[in-house]
Image (tube, rainbow, N blue to C red; front, side):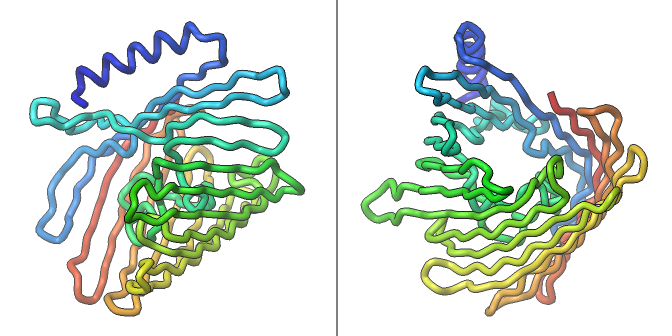
Length: 309
């Protein structure tokens, strides 16, 4: 799909959406950074579009007391996509349709797995070079999925994902999580989650996440064990982080390590600062480094801006 076709399709979608009777919300986020990157072969300067996105989401109430819900979200690369060379700056993110009621919600389509959703807002460097997906498996957004999210019961919630095999040679995948609390800290000051992946994108994994808030301080930790479905590539890892709000600024630091049974232990350290310009806008700076005994060190230093609408 080239850029012209993408723009045309989205224009038609937008026009149709605003003519519909259902509730329609248009939203998005632009997150762009200028950074010095060193992947081991020398440093260079680049501009990164850090999962910038836009989308349409909404719902419509039915006579039965249920609601139809949907989301059509797209990632847009605002930095270096080149349509002349066949690159497309628009790609798919979560896109689904489903039903919502007193039981919770069930959606069908492309969605983050229960395992991925279980981290909540724990990752302080999400979408940047220090994202936890650099070392940990399980940060999957998969199509051919049926996803379930229960209603909250005494602050507990159940998440589940079924990923269809989609071929005679494939295996169905399963992802499940149990969460407690509020990851946004609006109704509670603690969030805890236990999650499991089975046959998901070639891996089995178990993850325990916890994050808490004490006044201006947020503390978080994660433990994960993972292995390939054939029993090889087993590894254990953990993460600890902290964020402290100081006026309009938030100071943050994160340490992550993965230790394979056969291979180098890899450490990742990230530090940064966010400065809020308005409710939906901020500027930020960060430094991330990854190091292992028998691998080249990787370093990233950047500044950027994020705006949500």
